[in-house]
Length: 447
Image (cartoon, rainbow, N blue to C red; front, side, top):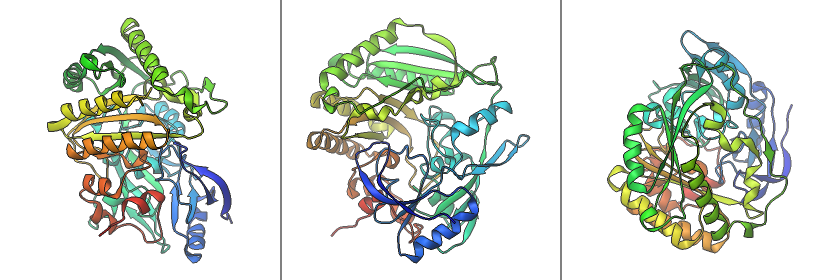
C-alpha cells in the first residue's frame, strides 16, 4: 500500500512558494480510499494534485497531505458514437489527444498547456481559445466520481440537485478527490488548424477584431505588447483559427525542442529586456506570414515546446495575474491596467487578451464570465511587484471583475469574496477533510 513521504521542495508552476509536503503517489484507484483514510486518521487536511501547472498556491497544502494523481491515468472507455470519453482523473491531455484524433475526435476545451490532468482541468474549470463557442470544460462533463473524506465515492452529474456537482466544477479540489471523469468530446477530422495572424495597433482595434472574429472563427486569442503606451496602448497580434478541412489525423508531434537548463538571474527580467523583446515580437508578427495551416500543437500549446520555461523567471519565481472584467467596463479597465503596468515598468513577455462568451459558468466559483480577460506573467521582484498587483486588484474590483484562482498566489480574502458572489454557498460543500494554502487565505472572514 502506498504511503505518504516527505518532499522538501514541493511547489507549483509559479515557484514562489517552495514548502515541505507529505506526498503520496498512488498508481491504482483502489489505493485512494486507503490513502484518504490514513490522512483523515492523522487529522491531516488533504488535497489532490495533478501535474501542478497551476501557478499559485491552490495545489499546495504544507499543513496537511497531498495525493499526486498523475499516475492514476488509465483510459476507461471511449464511446465514439455518443462521443463520450471516460478516463481516470490523472490522465493528461497530452495522453488523450492522440487517442481522440485517431478516432476523429478532439477535446471540447483545452487550456494553453497539454500537460494538465483531466481531474485538474475539471477542478479548475479550464477555458481556452474557444470560450465564446464552447464555454469551459465543466460545460462538457457528463459524470464524475468524487471520493469524500468519510470514505464515500459519489457519482455526480449535471442533474445533481444537491449543489455538490456545481461546487466540484472549478472547486479547486476542495470538495473531495475526483477519481474519474466522463467528458463529452467533439468531432475533428484531423489534427490541423487553419490559422490567421493579424496585427492590430491599439485596444480599440483589438475589440473590433475580436467582435468580428468570434462570429466566424472557433478559436480566437491575442498576444499584446503590455509595455506599449500612448496611442499604441494594447497593440498586439490577433490569432484566429478553425479546424482544417484537410490534414492528417496524426499531426506533427508537439515535442519539447528546448529546455531551460538552469534558472536565469532575476535581473534579466527588467523593463528594458521585456520592452525590447515585445517590440521585436510585434514587428516580426506584422511582417511575417499571415495565413497558415498548422499542427494543433503549436497552435494551442506554443510554450510546451520549451521545457521548464518557468525557470526563465529566476529563483524568485513568478506571479501570473489573470483577470476578467465585465463588458460594460472592459475597455476602460483594460486600458487602465495596461497603463499601470507600463508606468510600473514591470511588464511581461506573455500577455494574453481575449473576450469571453456569454455562457453562464457551470461551477459555483468558476472563473469565466462575460467580458474581457487579461493574463500576464510577472517576475517576482518582491514588494514592488506585489504593490503593482495590488494596484491592478483595485482596478479589477472597481470594474466589477475577478481573478483566476488557478493562477493566483496572493489575492486577498476581500478580493476573492467580492469577485465570487457564490463563494459562501460553495464553502458549504467544501469537504472538511480537504484544504489548501489558497483556501486558507481567501476563506478568512474578519471582523
